[in-house]
Amino acid sequence: MNCSDAKKEILRVISQVEPRELPKLIDWMKNSDDLDDYLIDNQKVILENIAEDLRTCLPLEAMFSSERLAIQMTQQNPKPTIHVDAFLYDDEAVDLLCEEGKMSRNYCLSCGSQTTAPLEFISHSFSILELQFLFQHVLPDLTGKIVVDVGSRLGAVLYGGYMYSSASRLVGVEISAEFVQLQSMAVEKYGFSDRIQVIHADICTQAALLQEADVLIMNNVFEYFLDLNGQMLAWQYICQNFRKKNSLLVTVPSIQEAFTKLKGNDCVVDICQYFEEVTVNIDAYLSKDSDADSFKQIHLYRVL
Ligand SMILES: C[S@@+](CC[C@H](N)C(=O)[O-])C[C@H]1O[C@@H](n2cnc3c(N)ncnc32)[C@H](O)[C@@H]1O
Image (cartoon, rainbow, N blue to C red; front, side, top):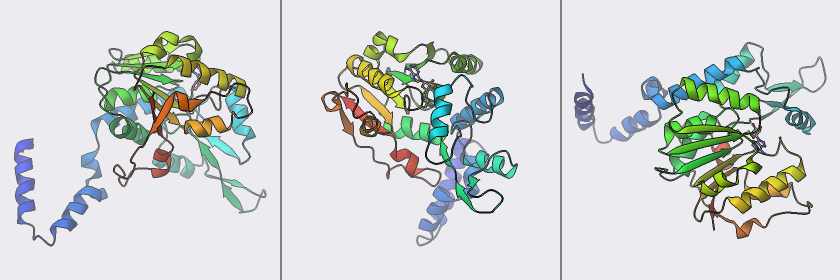
């Protein structure tokens, strides 16, 4: 049966359902797991394939030993914390790793006993669900726009933007040579080089790029990777150069939260003069797969 015939057949069946039964049927079509295998989108499959490729190139913790500051900061967290990259490992993959004994969601409070507490998980990448939410719901139509991901790491934002938006250019700027190499490999393998470019550089050398960007993405970019003074200087540089009126800035966490940690530093930037927050309506998007808590961390601002 071709698509057009299938549509007619579905409508025919629906038209025969008793009116009082119809809401139940519609609810089943929208929310039941029974249809999951049929509803999986092709873009998601490609992103999952990229994640699978990248997993084979990285240790389980998806960090390189050269990331000394990030490793040290993770270890210094008040609660025992592990890095699980959300682009590489979704909840199901984490469950599987736990079953196989390769990962744990808990740590032992008194060695040898069964008293355990949950570990803190942090991720240095967006998950595929977050990318879908970001490009299909948070951001407007990006046709003809330039998106810059500050600290593009595995390239998750770039691939997500390629799949879920019509942005004409997606540029990743990454300071770590090892991650640039991984991104370049994926961009070439999946034939993304017509719209994706990866630059190996400190964002604080990219004034021209920041000046032409229409959308800037900053996902937890500095917190684990720069000391407080370095973070402040990087923010200052971005505020001075990302100035195109009505351009959009996406941050995780909110700018306010990022700046709270920088308070007391001599050169705190007055963000109110640069950006205004745009409300993101999460409720309109939530589906059974979505993760409201992680979506709430995504903040959108307009350049004034
Ligand atoms: C939390 S990851 C962001 C990952 C990615 N943007 C995403 O959302 O999936 C932060 C990345 O920023 C990089 N980074 C930190 N400071 C940077 C800087 N000044 N210039 C360029 N990249 C930087 C780090 O090496 C790290 O890979």
